[in-house]
Image (cartoon, rainbow, N blue to C red; front, side):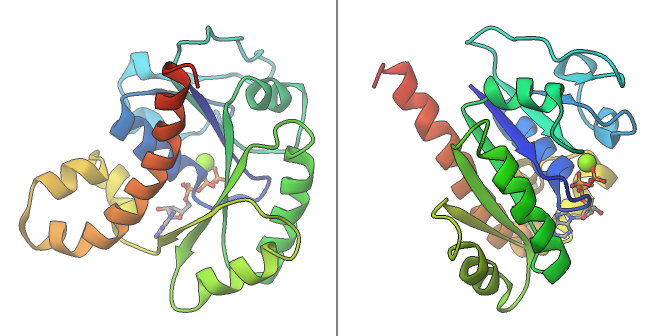
Length: 200
Ligand SMILES: Nc1ncnc2c1ncn2[C@@H]1O[C@H](COP(=O)(O)OP(=O)(O)OP(=O)(O)O)[C@@H](O)[C@H]1O
Ligand SMILES: [Mg+2]
């Protein structure tokens, strides 16, 4: 199973989401961001950072990979999207940000229409606004993820949400709501891969 996490817009949470998904699922990450902070957290064998002109390998069917992808649609982005089962597009509730995200979705759907939107860093009313704007254009599923200190903590503490929760205590308690939202996304991704394995 392969998933591309993509948006042209920077800073929407692509790398944080990719990293936490990879840790949760034990998958590898391939990125076109040569400055990616992922190597701080992921084991060497679980990360492939592509150099500027390095091609995206065509990975075997049974490889489980997340493509953490930024920048405009080029041949490499197309290669990542075409071999992915899904494309996740993290967006933020901000007018300009959403405009760029809509441009991104319009290009992405030309290459892979199996899109899910992540309404990221949401506070009060943000998810509703994202839903209102995007559902005028699309009917892709939208997964809200709260604004939470648990995200920077992934890189600060080199731990996944799961590890933070398993540790228990007050932090675990305060991260539980965002963990639960994240697990809805994880279920969405893996329920499809289970169906695939059964040949449905
Ligand atoms: N749900 C969230 N709550 C709080 N902070 C978040 C959340 N998601 C991401 N962040 C923070 O937002 C910043 C940008 O996140 P990240 O680097 O994952 O985005 P990106 O889309 O990969 O950015 P770039 O385009 O630079 O690669 C980081 O500081 C990260 O900790
Ligand atoms: Mg990134």
